[in-house]
Length: 353
Image (tube, rainbow, N blue to C red):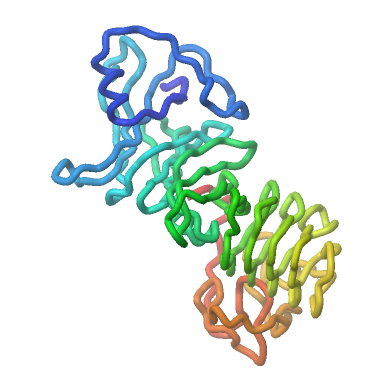
């Protein structure tokens, strides 16, 4: 059985040097995140994030596992490979802070794949694919470097979707792939929309806009439950927050912390909002949802969120693509109540997949 998971993520050229070069050198982890536990002793595998080439195999980018323990029958040999389907310009990858998952990105397509490298280190599996990075981040493109933070993954990127120039941003997800941070460097991130998401038990904030300037950020119709800190944070810029339902976040205390030019109305919340919220539903409880215990956040017929939202001109569908509104007005949260909708119940004891 494998004892350790490799702390190296190498490109193809580096792999050739590893297998062919006779020199012996001591490796360290000076480039790794200080939030990751340091591995001492011999590691069993090296994970190689490789670029696909036409006419070689399926031509797709792959994560390749190579034996790294001297004396093992698999030493220096390919143990397994996982294709991600297509060529995305595989570039960098990085471990989460617990080393249980490896995040890998494609520069050309801005896609991200999360591999489980703990369950069976010799045979990693894709457990999550994130294809919404550009939309999540408000126009950031080119997933480049992955750096572990406690419970989160910090991602640097190459450019922006507006002019494809060098101005870009830092973006964070939590370890489950839930997006919550936008940090532009020196130019505003403009016209991004975050809508129709369901966030449950985030360990930190659900959505955060840090000190960079935001121009016309829009946060609509999200359902947030049990965030362990303030659910929505915006430190600067112009942000509109409408039709969001925030249940029992921050231990029932203040649900948001926003400054700048903020439009906040037609939201629903437990505790206190944390600023001005006009035409909002306060004292939100789990009775507004079908079954919070099983993470079913569909609206029952008597929900206080039905018809309490405001019309948003830029879209007209909910989390399940149901047309809004079904009644005289929009509903608050990610789901629009519909007597004909079939809301799938999430699995019990869900895992990342």
